[in-house]
Amino acid sequence: MARLLGDELRFHRERLGYTLADAARVIRGSTSKVSRLERGESPAKSRDVHDLAVFYQLSPEQHSELEQLLTQTGNADLWEQFADVTPNFLKRLIRLEATAQEICVFEPRVVPGLLQTVPYARAVVRMMEIGLSHSEVERIVELRKQRQMRLDKGVPTVVALISEEVLYRLPGTADGMVEQVCHLLRATETERVNVRVVRKEAMVPPYPVFHLKFADGMHQELAYVEQLDGANYITHKRQLDKYRRLLDNVRENAYGRRESIKALTIARDHWMERAAAQTSG
Image: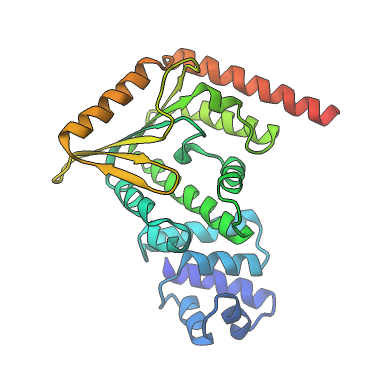
């Protein structure tokens, strides 16, 4: 796969008439580094692939193909590929997601990252990470896409508890919200994703909570509690019991499957009306 990725990069460079030196300047490296990358002899970094794709003015489809090849090369863990835009407290969670059997996440502010569409993720990152460059925003969005690709393998299964109010918050455009809610509706049709909408009047924690279960290992479960600039990992039984009960309480205040689908459908129709009104206006 490394060779296939390198061949694609060389094809686009030569197609546009760029030299090895031109590509080297883009990735802040030497011509020999680019040559090794194109021959599949040097581990590819996600940042370099992204920057070259932008430099070569590739279409979103072509860019996505390169990212898929990069993922399949297995050159590095996901968090290592995106180390420059991944805070330290998040790196462990990304590694743990890869080995978890089940993930339950409650999100009171936005749609969980594992279920965000690209336009929604881009809008959320721009809103919550003020001051980032366009390239940094796009790399964070790409990281979320790569984390979602693991769901295509069927493990882990995901239980997403989403506050009803989140469905009516607009981080981007009305059209973007239509796409996002439709994505959630499609997720309800799969066996590996369980979306539950939490009633807006429910008393719930104001911060995101993850609960991960594993098939084996010293710790068969843990909780991840995220704050604004950090996170706590809980493995002690007494504290785990506390957060398990907290999530159980959130579940009890969530709609059932049929009612959750209805709530999502109402939200979708709301944003479709908003989008149509903006277009006609």
